Length: 556
Image (cartoon, rainbow, N blue to C red; front, side, top):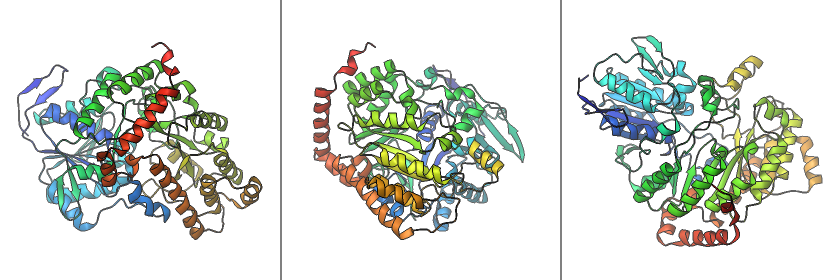
């Protein structure tokens, strides 16, 4: 380690003249990795330099790439073959410090890569951040010299400045350390304030990054890689935090670490506007901005109104909002966001049974779900069909729970898209502990949450999404819909047929609405270059400007 002279910048952070070779390594699907890109950008600003590398075993976010996998009801592979692992390990062993980031579903792959690097070079300092070390620190610390167990921005800069200068670092907050087998567990820093969030540099994007290519190694990220993995979209987060404590979600662990995580924090509207403008200056083909917030719809109306006005004036790119909560859906907010340019929403339903929603600790009832979907449906003229999440294959469901879920899906205002997941347990969440208490064995998140049981009940879920069959026929068929835990006959071929039409209909919806941010790739880029996508956007803008004018009548 080198003792270097540091300069403190105007924000109070150390700016380090660096000679130690550091690489940030994302082991995830694609190039989204929002938190990872934030950390990489911060490190480059205050440390001086760091290589940013992506290892993507699959392209989970590409609809066309995964269409065959979904229809066949297969498990999405999260591993890499031995030959490629050797290439990766050889490349990574040249660095002095490796900062990994991964979710739990990719934790086994991350461990394998770390082990292979350590065999080649024992003195590489391994740091592991991202969701997995926060959720399951007792697992991650066995494979790393340090893990980040809280918000990483300030914590990492504190750590790296001390590490580089040869000073004691093992009491750095938000970190655990593994020093010669001795585990040191430090306390948490306070969560970042909105002002601090607005002081950090924008997430790294299209700025000298590299991605691993099969049998080749790490190559520069070019436009074709962004089109392959991100299509014509850019993924970002405005707000941090979630007021809900759903037991299956990693947020329950974040809230356990710091109860203030339930409060929604966000930087200024101007900050996120500038982030998007920065991205568009590099990739003007971006046709959809995707907000992956858990609490976007919970932001106060006056802030959303400021956002709507400035978005249309300075950005005017269609956007998507994920993570809507039924209890927080308000007509005035939805209309305001539609006016601003919201073209698609995604909301968690999870179950049509109040009993199961209570088990999940969802602060939502089925009546609230129906109210929320009716509000959203009222703006179907201006948006693509909304997408709703549903969780199947829950071992504590009974037949009534299954039937209630199918009936709710059957009754939803149409059109809509259903995102279907099979219940898989994230370690160290409340759900994991509850199943352990009940003596129930369930799938791990490391296995698959996309491959569902080919039960008749799950066939009916798909069928009810495709079309409304006669209600008398549905009532008859529901008698044969059994819960996950019961012995039953399975219908893999019937499920294959129904899923084919299920996803074909979904594909048609994207095509009809010119949403090549989802289907995109090179073909979407061609449509952007020819101006077809912009023409469709202009038609939509004119219709909204003519018909939705009242959201601005409320004072800021």
